[in-house]
Image (cartoon, rainbow, N blue to C red):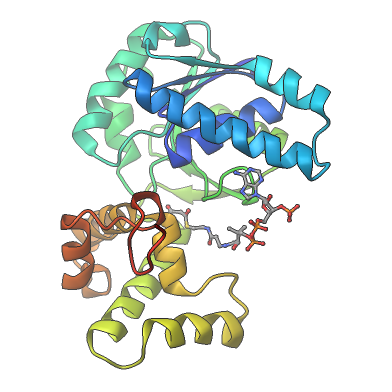
Length: 283
Ligand code: CAA
């Protein structure tokens, strides 16, 4: 199936990065937000990224202008009507997704695919509220989406082989390397990454080492690009909490139980880099 036009629901950190990636890869791209203020903020972030790429010589001004012309912001889900594929990257809240999927199902043409960028919620359940569960699967990007090479293609028990193959080819066309995962909470990356991040928080809670020493240890001792606290702030503490809760909910494995400090930081609005405060300050 040929993909010509792509829709992205949500222009936050992930949705914006995904829309940027799709437009850069040559796809006509529509990105939707719930209000003008969030849309303007998300589009401004993308435009800034393109300005930096031009200043670094990674894009010519002409290419940046063409890419910009391929990206359209909207507040109206009806503007997805002629998309061949829509990727949802809205808040990690199942009720929100269960409202969105039937609306997309009604709006899109019968051939169109509906993909979720969820990092750990049940995609089978999202497919089940549409009349096209065979055309629903996960396409999970990593932050920053335009840079990170991996995507997880997540197959539910209802996703057809044809959908999986189309989505894999689409991922390759974006310059990504797809890996295939079953629809189980956390897929591959978060099933492994979340316990590591939560263990770092527990070490801090227990006074075993300082924030800076834990970060330095993992950067220099394991060659990770970021220590766990820098990465937690970068991914978002709210996102990490939702992912941990979703995986804990599925397996009831204490490895995934959110540490008290994480929950309290999120309750206090300390989401990490995006809110200006997390384990580090970004003011
Ligand atoms: N658009 C285009 N290019 C971008 C960009 C964007 N939005 N953001 C960064 N870049 C580019 C930079 O311009 C830079 O390009 P050059 O190398 O050509 O100069 C390059 O990416 C690297 O960026 P920086 O120089 O700013 O910084 P860095 O070298 O320290 O790398 C990083 C930054 C890529 C984020 C690196 O630190 C890293 O890989 N960190 C780990 C990130 C990670 O683990 N992400 C996954 C988190 S888990 C997740 O997302 C899933 C989940 O469900 C929770």
